[in-house]
Length: 157
Length: 157
Image (cartoon, each protein chain N blue to C red):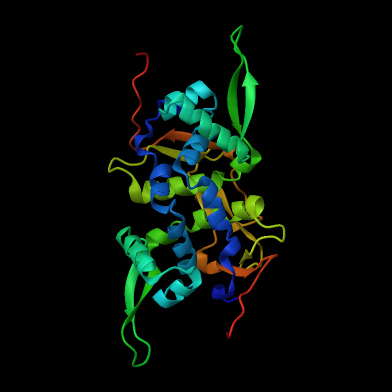
């Protein structure tokens, strides 16, 4: 097939980037994939204002990337957490691919912040193109370990 | 490891998006991955002005994504083509992942424009997270076939 004969008006790559090319959307998904899903926790870890975060989360709910779910701790008032949808998890290979590419070409000299391994075998995982009958790692199979340059924030202050 | 203790200042995902979040950079890479690498061909297929394309290609050369290589056809004057670097090919799984996600969630009702298969086995390929000892498909192993909604442009006019 001649590539130049393909009509690009419906290019799936560019449509996808339209949704996730915004850095903040991927930053929120990165948090949500790592179990940071409550409004207060997201706000603290992302370091944005309540109003900005609220607007962004609403946009991601509208895009079908997050489900807004109420929770209540003890006798406290109702709050919300944001769970990644199946559509969001569909971006997991893209997230890992972006991470490994950034690790390789854009990381600080002291190495990447985290590394990913398969919980079952302990082997490093990679995002790759494989045939559809290959054995793949589900997000729940992947553990996040400190990388070469893990800098933890001081706690308890 | 507690995710919220990770310092996000050096997040590889966001650094990567900083480079490839621009839709046009991924559009150019999509072309270059599909052997559309000459200035004239890129201009025609992307439908942008010479000056805009020239500026974008220069930026991608500066980012280490493209190598600018002279060529000459017959007695014609020297022209340039833009070859993807190893760094650019490192984004191949991301490109395929974006494409399959866009195909699944954002395609027109008549289906995605193209589909990718492994040349050796004929099986569909997917971008996935796998252990680093998995058998993967190199870009040269992957054939681009018409998808459900291939709309070719009229030729010869």
